[in-house]
Length: 476
Image 1: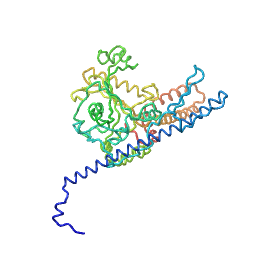
Image 2: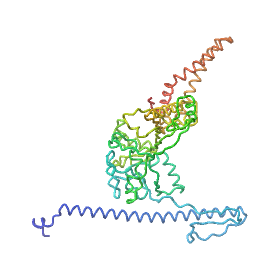
Image 3: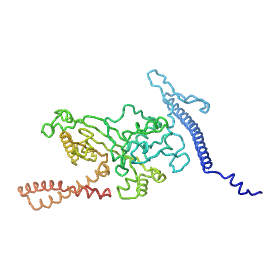
Image 4: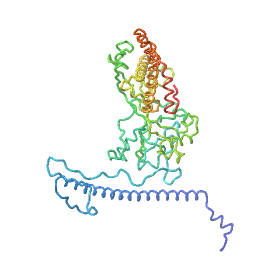
């Protein structure tokens, strides 16, 4: 073996440019290999799916035919071998023209048999869209991409799913084939009803951490990425205009608390003009963790563990900083000019209200949430009529995000305590009255007064029982 001389080494040494070209060639080769493997896997999955449907349909035909013939009292007909007969679709027509045809074809599978449980940064084929949260230039910041559709799965820069808590119903619709898994919405004529922003806060990653400030503009700002790269990019905010009618507002007009002006309070029935903003949650995890005074890793671990391990990428994809949680969002009801909401020189009446289905919708008397909500609407309207801004923000988090089950358990505990307390007092006092009718009347009145007092001072007891049952302390 002849060793090369120094001169030979110099002549054959690779330059940095040659190394970069070689690396790029290797990368392109891996990308091509990945696409080829995916294409082959997809074809195999399709063939496997067809075979599964063929077998399932053949079994269904056999069982249904037997059941049908047993009903008519005749023996089942011999069916051709399913391995040599097409079963897409199979339709048997009823003997009677008035009877509907018996459709025996089974729906095709909604997904391939290969399941991707999680992904990893640097994995071959994984190429997330750049996300610079808080960048002032939307093209540099990038869109929120969370869909797991075929063309978007490897480009995702967010964990979770669109729709918040409704994403589960979306999954059910796909499972039963009522919705195509690869459906992409047509956003023609769906743009915001009013123009909002941009504002300085949009360019500060620490100012907004629980919603996407570009959420109402996403499909239009990033339309080129949708058309050219086939990405599934959806809005997380929608803005529309509407009228609002609440029975109490008509009484507000009659009593003079509200005065119709034809613009905001439209008429004597108290009908209101309102601009509505529907907002789905988009969490910037580093910012959310900072708000709560914890590190991002602790937040990610808690979210993963306490959602039943539903989002493994919270653990495996530390490079992805956005999370669309499966929770309810919020709705903003703006009275008057929406542009005044952000004007620092304009007075604003604001009511932040947590959802209370029992009181807000059905008028339950077990709590007083609806009266507070109506008061907030009235004050917002009056401030808007004075030239200011009136806003009601309605959060979809029942019982301070503890849910109705916990809320009703607390109600039961509170009512039991109150009733037991009153019963003990009444029994003690009646024993002392010894049949004196006058004393008994005064005692019952006193018990009623105590009941009213207990209702007033019951808030602290309510929050205490909430902590006992839910395990968390409610701050007011």
